[in-house]
Amino acid sequence: MSKTAKIYQFDSLDYGKILLTIKPHAVNLFTQPDNDLWTFDLEGRPIGMFIDGVNYRRTLSNHYFQKDRICIDGEDYRNVNPIGLGIAEGLIVNAHKLLSDIRPKLPLEIHPMIDRILSQNMPVLEKNGQAFNDIYLPISILPPDQYMAMVIQITEGCNYNRCTFCNFYRDRPFKIKTADEIEVHIDRVLDFLGEGIKLRKSIFLADANALVMPQNRLMGALEIIQKKIGSTREIFSFIDVFTGIRKSSVDFSNLADMGLKRVYLGIESGDPELLELLHKPQFTDDIIDLAENLKRGGIQLGVIFLTGAGGWDYHAQHMNNSQALLEKLPLGKGDIIYLSEFYETNPEYETVLKKQGILQPNRQDIRKMTLDFKSQIQEISSKGVIISTYDIQQFLY
Ligand code: SF4
Image (tube, rainbow, N blue to C red; front, side, top):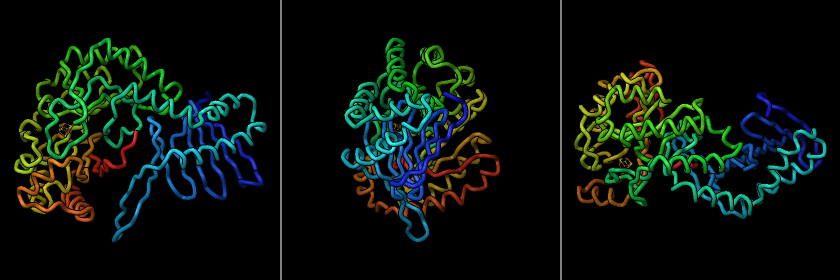
């Protein structure tokens, strides 16, 4: 596959202008004047579609979603809703028909790519989705800048798994994979992705806190990754305070040498009372120690705060104590502060709120709290830190 995009343009009575772009990592099919767009990976699997002004996404498990945005009081709210396989199939069939029509006019060297796309009909895609489900436990969440990462599940679940608000890993026991299991897992991932790997620019170590692995085993896992996938992709992972503080700056420096670029830490709040409510008992001093060790080891940091947690009752102390904590963290260029708008994912949280007589704020209230939070910490961006919102409902893999 060429390193530059190849563009082919046709006029059609049925569709108007048709533009086919073969990129080094994906294929785009675009029609004008409708502005419909289909994107495929290099195995020919659809990734996304923009049809009649509506955005659609396919996950690797072959589920399809429609993404909408609504505007309320000048604020954008995004929604992600599943659509049926029948509707998705109709959208894909239209693209296949179009490609079949233009295929005879395309140079012969493009035919294998077109044929690969045409071979990915719904029964094949369903089988492919099943293969994905056999390789992975569900990928519950990734940081927004890692949505297109190649996920390698060197561990499964969360070794803590008791935060009241979090439901991501309650469906599985915590497990650290052996070196043999990691080798087999990576082989299966590579086989599954095939040429689609070219879309995956980074590697994400899953699940919730893969770095909990004892250091020697973690280094071994990174060696396996280097051997099997190569060392060109940067590596990312979540980290938690409880286990992160057990690693030294030398440990982090060794991990950085093996490609670990940035870790993401769910701080949630700098307010101890709110952390207690969330059942996440982490100490400010530990967070600072961990951040300093990471920095000394040459690893970038993404920190996540849960805006709207604890409702209006906790909002001011949540914001003020989080800002105070942020000012003590050695953040700079390459680091990210994510403000994650609170979505209730676990009924345990609602029970705790009810016990304390706290009202769960609605989505608009949570947005107001997020904007408040963002403006309060805005000054930190002068250090080169990116401040961004994180909408977990947007996550699809
Ligand atoms: S928030 Fe993180 S540490 Fe807490 S249960 Fe969820 S994954 Fe585990």
